[in-house]
Amino acid sequence: MTETALTYSDDQAEAHDRIAEALRAVGVDLEEGLLTPPGEAKEQVMAVIGKAGSGKTLLLAQLYRALEDAGVDVVSGDWEGKRRRERRTLAILAPTNKAASVLRMRGVPATTIHRILYTPVYDPEYERIAEWLAGNGDRPEIEGLTDQALDRALAFYQNNKSIPGALAAAGLRGSDFITGWKRRDDPLDIGFVDEASMLDKKQFDDLREIFPTLLLFGDPAQLAPVNQSGAMVFESLPDPAKLTLNRIHRQEADNPILDLAHALADPALQFHDFEQMIEDKARADDRVRYAQRVEVDLMARSPVLVWRNATRIRLINAFRAVHGAPETELLAGEPLICDGLELPLKHRKKRLDLEARGLIKGAQVIYLGPGRKPGFSRLHVIGAEDPQLSAASIVKIEKPDEEEPFIPFAARMGATFLHGAAVTIHKAQGSQWPEVQVFAPDLYAAARMGRSEAGQPLWKRLAYVAITRAEERLYWVVRNRLAKPSYELRTDDLRAAPVALELEPQEEPTA
Image (cartoon, rainbow, N blue to C red; front, top):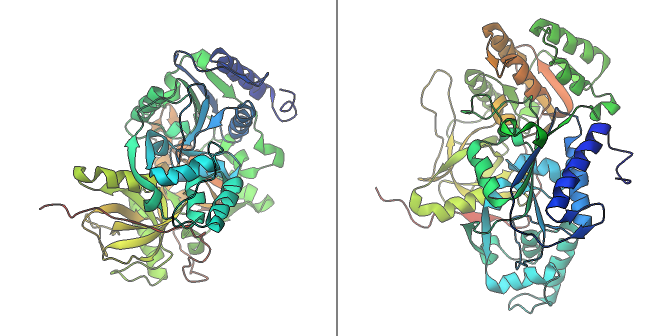
């Protein structure tokens, strides 16, 4: 605790000590830096609960570093190497690629839940490179790979700790070294789960099967998963297993966005009072904008957040119209949201490939252009570690007042996408963007309806989730207007992956 005393508040210090005590009981002593081999698995689940800015991420990061310093191996889901009975492991998880990338940007090696539930199967020849990079084997000699290629792999791994990235730096494609994916058979050890408010019961049960020691980090003020009656999985834990953080750490920088988020806890606050508060903040601080229109330039990378689907569809079509997008095709740079996979059961392996590359429901994607085959799209998956790939795609453009979406082009099967210039606040959970636009007329409609969720006015829960998606600047849009674009859609700002992957089914489905 000596290293963290200056940055921990009292409630964080208490949570740290409670977690350290629980870890000590299973053979991981953070104070002494001592590990003992895992014994008989005894399940324990704890939750760190706090609103935005309360220091959950700081605590998670400090615990990760303490575990790493003690000798616990971090499991990324990309490659695990040979199992050793005595080793202790930690996996840091998030429900989506975007949420995992937020942690990685802060130096925490997070991966998605899916990448832990399903593990890659490596070609034995190239697995020798992985063992060498991880320090578990001698430098190999691989036919077709030069010493310079292995040196590039080593340099990449030393900086990034990513086996797939290192192999790609050596000039290999993903299909060269990953031959498939399989459901995890063996349990792991310690699991940290960020954005735990997004977990549904099935995911929670899956994680409890894998991790004897599971620590959830969640925000009780967010929206609960759909079909869970407004409840979050950590709310069912016994009180001693719930550690609550109250102090608002990020407000040390006088963050007006968090001021607004926490003002929503006042039960007497009405919608018009809240809008007046936003307008007052906007006059005093440029990080809050009381906007008279939607800025279309922001929509290509940061979707407008709405409550109603009808609003979402209107904004998407307005975005496409001002950019002159034809109905029959997409423009490079248009944002998409993965809406799931349409693959028959016999293509289960391909489904795992697509999901492992980041094409899971809710993933934010940028369209780069058509692929080499009809129905294929080149895509950039926001937040994925290797973001660029080519996949069989079914793109649906919804139209106002029309039940069926327009499909500009489609493969017979593959990843399905909706347009991503605007998304519902529910789907935005787990993501953050530097600048966020919230469509206030939708929240006003929720306030007028008087609906509640988990005992709180729905508009307040929606507003809380929406405004806490903004990292640097919040636009509270009060008029149904759209600005003209200042520039054409672009893709040159997107980081290129070390390798582009063609992901397609092995055969066409039978009629």
